[in-house]
Length: 148
Image 1 (tube, one colour):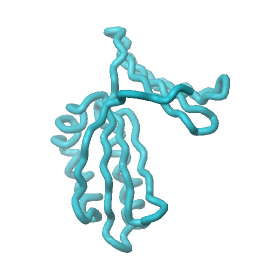
Image 2 (cartoon, rainbow, N blue to C red):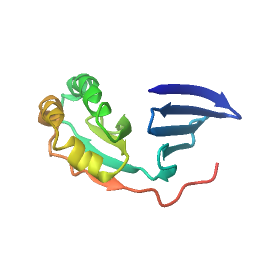
Image 3 (spheres, rainbow, N blue to C red):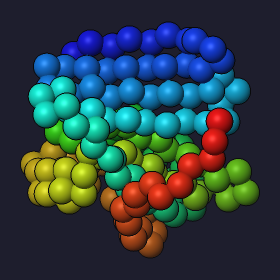
Image 4 (tube, one colour):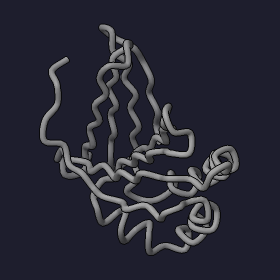
């Protein structure tokens, strides 16, 4: 895996590449715009990614323990085939509410590759007992983006 991180013309660019794929993340230095590209180096095709969104309601008083457990769990998900990136965001108004954003190459990478893997059982053991209620997870594709 090759990683290149540089800034140019007010944008930070981060590229990951292996022998088959390249992922490019472009972010403005003001943090206002972020865009991801997934490119297959073998077929020379740009592939669109999907975004998994999981709104997480954590049991009252368990937020800190959840965040500690998530630090361990993120190593599991980030090692999965088809995984691109993730973010865990905590709500400012409600400290027990989070949103997990995970970028995957496609829905199958999440639903079949991750959720049906032995590693998912480890993820489940680390995190699922914190959720109340259990989250509804949906997948999204980009249809529009603001101009820089």
